[in-house]
Length: 283
Ligand code: PRT
Ligand code: ZN
Image (cartoon, rainbow, N blue to C red; front, top):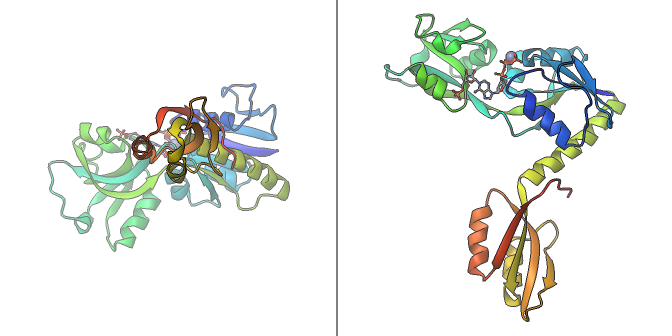
């Protein structure tokens, strides 16, 4: 049985559960419980505050967990990153009052910076040979300059609207973060096997999300050119159409360069292009 800790409530909770469910794990109990067991996979979920997860993993109360990279780095526990999960993307940034002009990173010297991430900020400052005061507070960091508690802050930024509404501006990105699957480096063999099985499923879910199934009709003389643009997993499937000299071609296309490729395909004479989401993709 592999024990995975996920956030009890908050920004990571829903996506963490969704990822596990898309990986085929079924749970009968809701998150109201402290823990719940998957009904079809040797996994038990523990619902915890995200800040506590790295410690629980170090103590091997949990074997693995899902947290923001920012939390993992701040806590400095015996955890290793197993997989970046591509959600809860944000950045940890330094911000100062908008009314002030920013004279570069050296102008932070001697300032007082309020943050919930003292360890990360300390490392960042010492990397740049800057001495500044760090004022640790656990919440509502963005109001600190306004009430005279600090000259600057270092906090999580996503859209930037919190900074804006508090009269602050982002001046340095300390780190970029996303949700990560972490685990103890000391997993026993049996648990490692379960984790690898889960990891394989997560990878299939992620590659499915990044790819689309594509069907199109094309004149036979365009098949080679189109195959070069969308080679698919091995090679496209090609079936003759009733109409002479035409074929139906099925392949896979990556989300990132999707529109560029569609333009190319059209220029080669492709018609009736259908694009369909993929649920799982196993290479
Ligand atoms: O209760 P618990 O301790 O478990 O949760 P929490 O309140 O500590 O964490 P939570 O749920 O707020 O965030 C969990 C993780 O989500 C963080 O550690 C980040 O890795 C990630 N994440 C992604 C964010 C944001 N986006 C985010 N926007 N965490 C916090 N914010 C906050 C930020 O603190 C600031 O107040 O949102 C505000 C900024 O957002 P914008 O859009 O206005 O810039
Ligand atoms: Zn927290």
